[in-house]
Length: 331
Image (tube, rainbow, N blue to C red; front, side):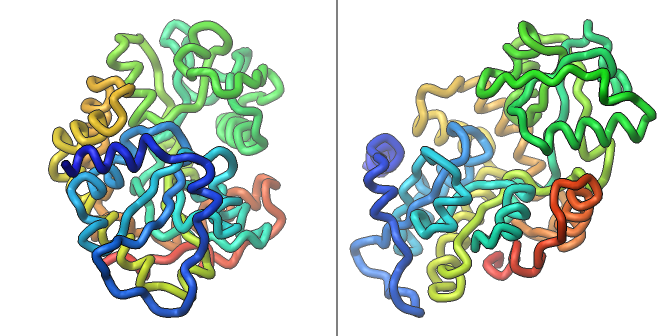
């Protein structure tokens, strides 16, 4: 049965498969044969609705129609490093990470924006009284401990004349953000499409400060799909086939959110089915939003956030944006 084959794709992946994944030789795409061509796709997080288009494309045979078999791997390390080192053909990342990678001469390219607008922001229990960045004063933040977190919080507070020095920064690591705001910190950075929906289902009384509404420059693409520059140059037809099937998968998820939720839940049964469905319904209108086609990326969005990183001292120069992303593989 098709479903059994697809579950095997997800369940039977090991690191050894990742290490054997290399660039395809030659400059032309291989003709379709009865034996599908295997490509590796790295997930940057545990399975969730950001990846629904992929799971739908696998289950519905869209990759098979393109002569491909997609091997999903939850990356044991940096997706950027692995795709850049040709250990996988594709992966999930985000605009900020791709920007840093290009400046570090890591040859990765964003080939699609999975969601058109940044849905992330800061969540806090309503009882903490945090309704705007100025309310961060005297509060504690629980996060991953990255420079971008500090720069973002500082910038939002300074726009409102607040003192960043009065924020306690706590590194909580991989702890559940909802657990963090209940036990360890006053506010945390989340993606609303998953953790915000989870907070709703749990009945939490919370406030949410959406980044893109606080500063237009923070409306960057997250997540994005990436590939390797060498693969794009030497075998663009492989990339085109992969992206054609992937786009069909996301369009299916947009038009059939309940069915896409079922596919994801059956492929990854440990997920909370109610959360998957609610998240899928929320994201269905946001994958493509007002864009002409799913996956489309704007130079303006890349330029705005790059300049924001530059202004706040997180990068020393702008990358060559025409090499950082491409829309060439979107129909």
